[in-house]
Amino acid sequence: MATPTMLLLLADGRFPAGAHAHSAGLEAAVAAGRVRDLATLGEYLRGRLATAGLVAAAFAAASCRAASGSPGPSAVDGHRPAELTHLGVARRAALARLDAELDARTASPAQRTVSRRQGRALRRAGREIWPQATFDDLPATSDGPHQPLVLGLVGVAAGLEPGQVATVAAYATVTGSASAAVRLLGLDPYQVQALLVRLAGDCDAVAARAARAAEQPPERLPAAAAPLADIHAEAHVTWEVRLFAS
Amino acid sequence: MRATARLVARADRHGRTTLAELRGESPLLLRQVPASDGGVTVYVVGGAAGPLAGDDLRLEIEVDQGARVRVHTVAASIALPGRPGAVSRMLVRASVSEQAVLHWLPEQLVAAAGCAHVADAQVDVAAGGTLHWRDELICGRHGEQPGDVEINTWVDLAGRPLLRQSLAVGPNAPGWAGPAVLAGAPATGSLLVVDPTRPPEPPAVWPTHARLPLAGGPATLWSATAPDAHTLRRYLEPDTRTAELLGVRPESGRGDCADG
Image (cartoon, rainbow over all chains, first blue to last red; front, side, top):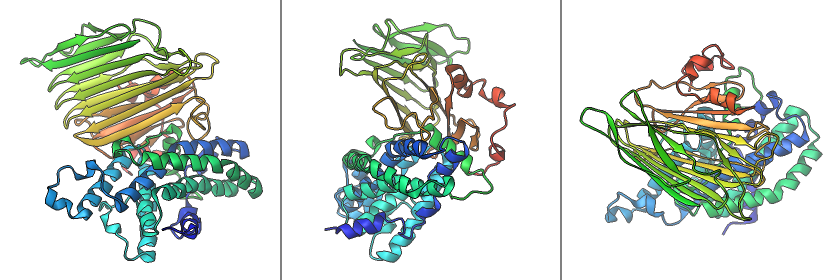
């Protein structure tokens, strides 16, 4: 059973997976003049939470379920019953399917690259911290596994439930951009923290919705899109000088 | 109102497309118009204003091997409110076989104040099939805040997930008009081009639209926000798009290099 401390450790921005290097599109939104102050930051975070936050949380929870529990029916198609006794086969198939489904929800190549780069960094930390965990079940893609899938596996290693993993993902969606906003716009950190406190209920609601959605077949997981998220990510990756990696 | 329409296209032995089935019912009527290229062009003729909340409309499209079909609508659809709590639904299911071509290029969907509309599209494209799929959404009529609209698109290519996208606007979609999603743009849309004969194009970005090569196959998504329907169409026009944009430089040289 997970302890609350384990949840706090995973959600902590100081967890060594490089999250502090990312603004999740905020740097590009600031440069485009779309986020200028506390009010526009609040709207930005609400939109992120309802789109990228929901998708990331649902995939993290689904990955956690796939890695910890019994595989869903879609994962076992095409395998002989004898193979099913080998749970690892089904688990690998389920994670590969989630990887392809998340790719289909990430139209921007720049966003795919960032998600896989962050997935690599988190996997590195996860392997060091939980050497017995089964990160090898993730699909062997050359550019790394998607971050939410790794987060699900880290959650299993840490003894967390899918719902708790979804909370970590939703929380990271808002806190990452919020702390980037303090640096990019010189906002008052107290005011930004007050904004996060106001968003806490929304964050919990998104995590709960994501955890429920994670029980659906992979093709039915949330796919909430945001046209400007794709545009911001593609613009940002072309810059020669930038403060954040995304 | 409930209505179902169905279109099945086959290629004859001369390679000409024929309609094996073409039937609909008000407000979802299908009309074939002459096409010059051996393919078939069909218009969806709205038999009534709407969709109105409470309507349940289904359209099935089957394009068999070698057949070529273009589908348009005669006018924009305007999602309107109906009785309280009711939702209007439009489901399009399409399958595109090997060597088949489907162009789904309807006019805009306009989200009127107070509407509650869900548009679902489920498209299966076989390996070697070609698809152009455009969605355009106008958030409110002139000077109006839109009701709730959700556009869900699932596209599989060769049995694998290619595109899953849900766009939600309106009072029930937090932050939809904010800087993370549309930044107040009243028009948004996308054009998906699945074309095995087209060389893969690198990503490119302009201030409010982008060309995004997808991970799951020879496919590109054009995604845009715009101040009006006319500008949006210019960003999402499959035939004239390249020519029109030729004079416009991307925000950087990324469009000219193969950096993925």
